[in-house]
Image 1 (cartoon, rainbow, N blue to C red):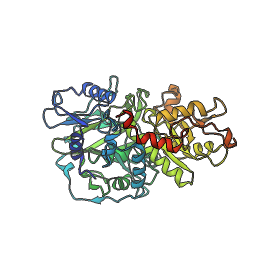
Image 2: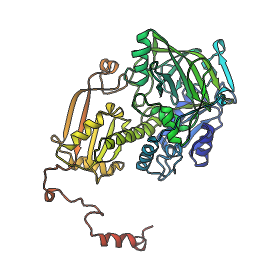
Image 3: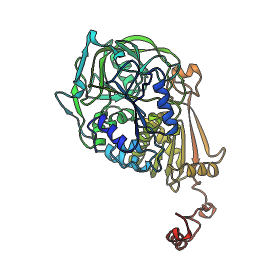
Length: 486
């Protein structure tokens, strides 16, 4: 099922008990952020703020739209619902469905108009403070208008249009700032092409719309892949795009808010800090590129999606590790590796991966780890745990058990120096290396049985499905309720 817009998705969340309407007046200055953060901690329904101090009726905020749920068997309900799946879907099923749809991209269609054009502010009419942008965390460098959105930029030498999610802080009524890191696709375009040629880079920021749009913006797709095509595949029908007012870019027609403009070459202004997805305010205030806003278009009664990033599990931790899992699993399988499942646990904020596999030859775990680190999402995953294919990597009980009894304390752990790392945000780096993105490392934990061991040397797992005859297992399962169990 494809959602027409964010409002249709909100109705679905409410129907499923995954949303609460907050009609009491709340302050955009820290109170909104605190409520969203508390909702994550309790795995409570997504808060939908309808009465924001100083903004009256008509300006609304949606938080935690992809957060996890405390309802039984529905931990990833909001992610599943975003993809039109059963809210009780297992995470392994969500990963496999993502891969299936990802392989069938659908090109967008261009429309002449859309709801995002109901209001148009150009030039002197532009005022970013018109929207109830919150100060999310104490100590943030400013009001962050871009936390769950897409930033659209176009490669000047090809038809590649990138949709990414990069934080955006308001400097004043007509400018914003944010991280444009060199390894990111937006950074490759800006530094290597636009700035290198002393040309401005056009951008468009789109907020709201089908929830799949934000999910795709978080996904670590290869370069020269248009995220809008993948979004079409995930939703099962094309995304409708409409042309911007002042830049040569297109945005989803049902977006709630669209911000257009350009990033000038060699201009920098201090931005940050911000409570980030790693769970810390890890990046200090520093000079970063400036987004000059030329136009803002928006729907009547616009809804601003907000993610209060921090200690997991929030939107970033619930969505990005899962799309990373799917992208890595797909790439490893396409290389012909006998991989059963890849799972990046949300608590690991995209920096740990569990991989289950058959082991065809000795030291195969090293092959798996190096293949994983060669993928785009794997580049910034410092910790890889490889287990045998009888371990369910989505079950932490099984993973921790395998880790503690099958990984040798020194023969099973491999460390690699000077690997790539994400600049600005990695808390384990020194302040100097955090700024430069240097001094990274990789670690492999081999939790598979050594291939050179004879079969009789491999211990038998003392579990219900292994140490009891099949006929006894079937008898116990058949008579379970008769024993008095519910």
